[in-house]
Image 1 (cartoon, rainbow, N blue to C red):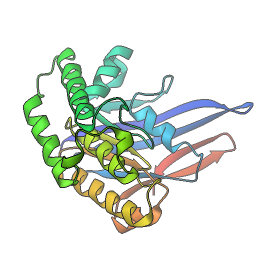
Image 2: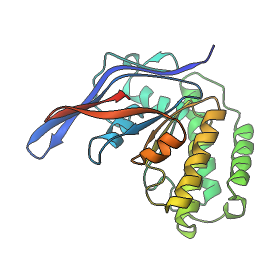
Image 3: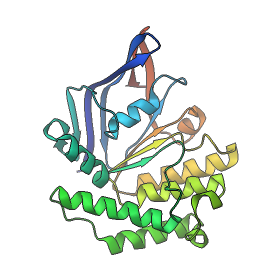
Amino acid sequence: MTEQILNIKNLSFSYKRTDENYSVGIDSLKLCAHDIVALTGVSGCGKSTMLECLGFLRDSMVFDEFSLCNTNIKDLSKKQCELFRGAFIGYMPQTGGLLPYLSIKDNIDYKIDIASCSARKLGFDFYDKAKLKKRADDLFSAFSLSSLLNRKPHELSIGQRQRAVFVKTLCSNPKLVLIDEPTSSLDPEHGDILFKMIVDYCKNLDMAALIVTHDTKLVMSHGLRRLLYVRKTANSGSFCEG
């Protein structure tokens, strides 16, 4: 039986836009290992905000159900949510994602240390740091980055940085991978290559992935499930399967 990673019902988040409150939500979403879902919609509809909610990066979201790795998020304190994020979630932001004062190798080692420490504080002992570092080395080789490990982020091209951030996202073997517009800063050719690599790796590993993207052509060409933004009122909308 395929492992269930994420289960959400009626999640919403409200924030101010100009002088009005605006809310955005997800009606229902279940992700199992190897599932990849694209979060799509017009610019400014709240795609990145929803991704941040799923990564415990937004306070004050409300929901009927939110479970990650069979843990009810309502049962966790704010500190425990932070530890859960470190142990179980890999997050790839649209920009940044690497500490600028560390080499690429040190960025990876730091991420693995955070994940291992977070899991241990939660009472889990499933991280073998030596295996994770070997896994990171294999990923760097697969992504043609092995010769760049001692460089700082600013010494890499945009495409190299994006690939390095993706390796950092995967290096701790997370259960849920959240990726925000991974191809937005790349030309179409390199964007297509990176998107294919992301999809292939996420499908073959024991994780679920949610990818924010405006590129519906890529979503369709890879046959991904899609959560499409639907406006409900002038001040609210939600993401629904479609």
